Each structure stands twice: as structure tokens, then as C-alpha cells.
Length: 252
Ligand SMILES: [Zn+2]
Image 1 (cartoon, rainbow, N blue to C red):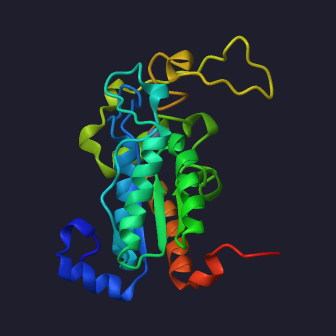
Image 2: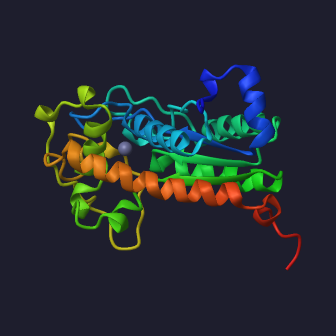
């Protein structure tokens, strides 16, 4: 059975929508990930997680939206960023297009933390319109699922965990001979409780926020499998849930 929307004919899509009200939409970014990783890291990983989950449980998966909210990486060549408003409207209109065919539940697989604010605004606005949108992110959960696999310094942006996922999913576009370990700099005005709107270039010269050199395909495979099993659970729960139970309550 086909699960990728762009591979189906309209007749096959009609058949899917007649029986299902749920779809998966991967969203990512195209931004620097250190000297060893491809710019597409965040959208390539989101795409792989979404597609593999869709295949395992027979749920429709859309094409990945590759550009996200990542202007903070722009000083590194090749980072293509859009505004939060643009991402929000784009994702919202894609969800509304799905809703025209009866989709009421959309699972967004987000590959880039900078997109989260815009995506949560989409989720909140669409819930008012009778569409339930959930957002799944892989990196906040792996410390819990696989606590022994990486240290905190190996789990940050462009570090060993993310590089390992790239090594297991698309090894031919990772160059481990370029991998570095770089501890990010603290800004001189920062104290506890202060959040600063700084750019990546303020913290690191390589774009790596910690340790990346111990990355391996074997570790990446473990991360991928652990993440997929969580997402499979979520999509199955959502598929079974009654839409009335997911909608806003009218009053207390
Ligand atoms: Zn990333």
C-alpha cells in the first residue's frame, strides 16, 4: 500500500481519505549543521522519521516542508530561512487543504526547534476550526529513552547524536573527517534567568555546540528506532481517538 501522497493517484488518495481522517506532515529547515553535516539535516531527519512511521502503520505522509525559522544560523553559508509568519501560514494552508478531503488529525513531525512557536500557533488556531494538530519532536525525548547513549554535550545542535542519525540515514552526505568538538561561548552579559536573541555565530565558529566526533551509524540506528517506536504509539493513539474528545470544550 502506498503511503506517500505524492506517489498516489487522485483515485488512490480518494480511497485513503474515504477511510482515514489522519495524516503526517514533516517540517524542517535548511541550515548549517557544522562542517560535517548537510544543510538539510533537520528536514532530512524529519522526513525519514515521518516516512518510516507512515510505512509501518499505513498512514498518509506528505512531502517534507524544507525551509523553516532559522535566521539565527544565517551567517553560515547556505542557510535558507523564512519568517515565523510565513511558516505558520504555509503549514496552516497545507492542513486546511487536507481538511477539504476530511482530514481532522494532523501529526507534524518537526525537525527544527526554531519552528516550534509558529507550529504551536497553527495547532491552536486549527483546533478552533475543528482540526487537531499535534507536533512531534525527536530530540527532547532521546535523553529519556536512551539515557546512556550520549552525554548532554553530545546531544546539542550538530553534535554526535544528530550526526549519528545522519550517518545511519544518509551516510554518503556526511563527512566525518570534518567533524569537530567545540564548546559554545557564554555571552558576557548573560546571567541566570536571562534569554538573549543571539545568533549561532555568537556562540561557535564551527556551528557545532559541543561534541560531534564520537558519532556513529550504529548509535544513530538506536536513536532512530527508539524515536519511531514513540511516534508509532502516538499516531496509533490519535488514530483511535474520537475527534469530539480532541476538540475544545465549550465551557468548564
Ligand atoms: Zn538540527
